[in-house]
Length: 179
Image (tube, rainbow, N blue to C red):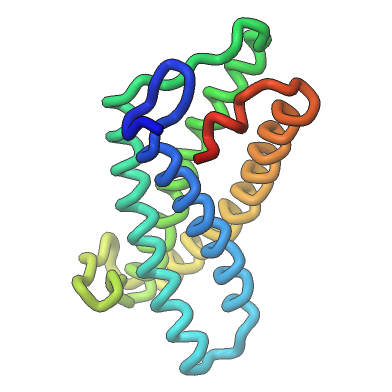
């Protein structure tokens, strides 16, 4: 396997970033919904701290992933792939990247509006983006939660599209993102 992408398949770096981020994002969604139902306690505060740290990690990784995407070729689709599927795939990728930015940013804004800091595993603290404001905290909380629900739907569509290509179309779209 190549480190970089080729015109036929994704390389090691792209595949690693894809699956690492997939695991992190799915884990974050599960953790977010789990901890939102917990009563205020030390356990919940600890989980919120982990959630924030992993959110910062996702934000850093999506920046790296986009930079990597810009300096690498993107594998081409099979000639038999209809144009509408190619457009849908490109659109879906842009939407996924958008949500990979929006989720951590709204979490950071929510923490800032609550007057709380965002730490990256205790190594450094991010500056607050807005002053403490309960109304803004509520606003960003609602955006963050709504985006989480939308992101789940987008991930399901993404997975279903990959499975459709693999089992129905019997093409190599899924295989080229596997190690």
